Image 1: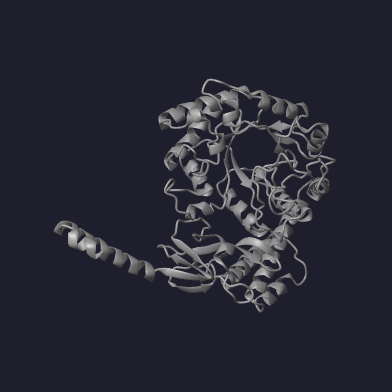
Image 2: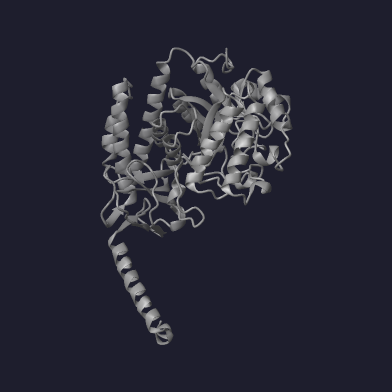
Length: 516
């Protein structure tokens, strides 16, 4: 620094002094706005930084917000913004599993500097959320087991971790009790409900695969990735999509050839890259119109855009352009097929990535914010599509999330869903490593438990009209060990559990195909 001062001209020196003085002021101001979040294990020792996953902040409406955070061994610091925040992280909770938990300062958030014990605060937050859900359940006429409320009271006298584990389990028990109560009140099976799966294993897996598919599903999604059907700007190859669509239709099933315009890096063809946005608009319009016209009368639905909330954005479009692009694709779909039901499909539903700094995407939006912007902009679409690859969230938090998206006022399709049946690496899957262990290391029985829980919750909600698993069998799966069938096509417990649920809900042998 002295060397710079000696050689710098007077004007430059003056500017440098002002800069350093301003930096010092900003640094002091930032220090005055810091919240220290302590991460201690059940023995009272500091939790290593590597064991604190996905630390981020949300506002009190559960919307993720970009906040400067720094995670260290045993604690994290948050530079508090100008609104109250809740803090969230993926942690291993003894006697429950590894899930994302949140602390919201008894519903008031954190807006003042200080130090908080994350697990203790998260236990309090969870108890409040369970009690709120219990109040709703009682108003609905749900009967909880005797002693349920006493269990919550007793939890408060336990250690922070024990209290949190009890509250997490109680929340899941309550979410399932409410869902089962709603299903019991239904007058028989839900007519027209779609139980689906992607059709990408047909016909290569043979007749046993086809038979297993027919036993569980009445709805399928054929492959329609942009780089496959439009490898060049003027070349088209619909052979695979046509074959999968016709297979589904031959069994009377509903079909959704999707997605016609998807900008993930792995499926965006080279010929589309480095185009000005005006050309992207034209190309998107023409492709979506072409696809919808081709499958008019055969494909009932169209995902007009997929994961376009600043996540799958290989063309690096601005947020306002992504909203506009949804409108372009919406109009094109209607031109191609006046009867098609248009879906805007989203992933990473909690939007944690919004809190991560990104020089490439500085103004990121959560899926919820993106959908809200599409609604405000008048984008025409009939259905919200949600991907549910989130076994690192517990069932009560999933239940809360679904109700939040329902507030957009649109029917919902669970367009993709999956979880693992074994821990570790799956060399045959597209995504190689299993995610956090919901109730411990993944097993086939735990996968079955998650399938039963998530299908029960989703089927019970009137605004959810379809659920699609992704994929049916291992060895051709996206999610690691994510099939309902093993690689040899023998059924896992999850397959049998779902089959039993369908029978319990009044479907005779298999769900009715559309129109039955």
